[in-house]
Image (tube, rainbow, N blue to C red; front, side):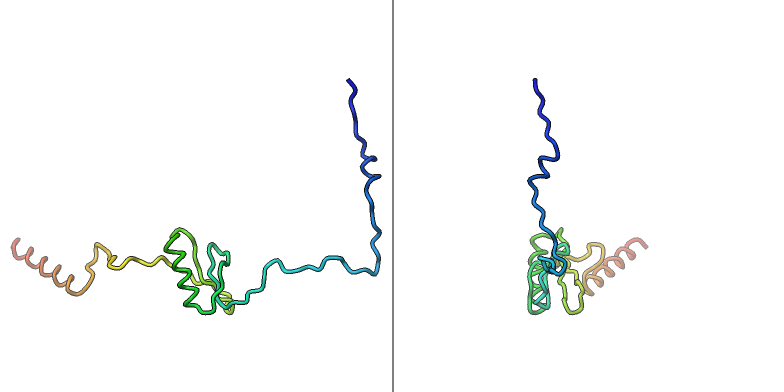
Length: 123
């Protein structure tokens, strides 16, 4: 069985090299990798800018819609002027009160009367 070997010189003969001119400018001009921010407010999901908006309220509304559908994501509104992210929290459902603390004054008064009634019975 005959074994073929490939030499490096065969590859070098095919390469063409062009000389670099001393007074020539580089062929490629470096461009920024990120597009410029043209809108004043952006919705950011996990620190990635998604959509631009003219007002903070419009951006906040869009961010809340995303946060309602996907509560596990980190959703913010990015202000390009201040260069600041405002975190959008998931809205709490209406009527969701702490079960260990009465909701209002009427509930506190009712609880106080109940405790007073219990105290009278035991004495």
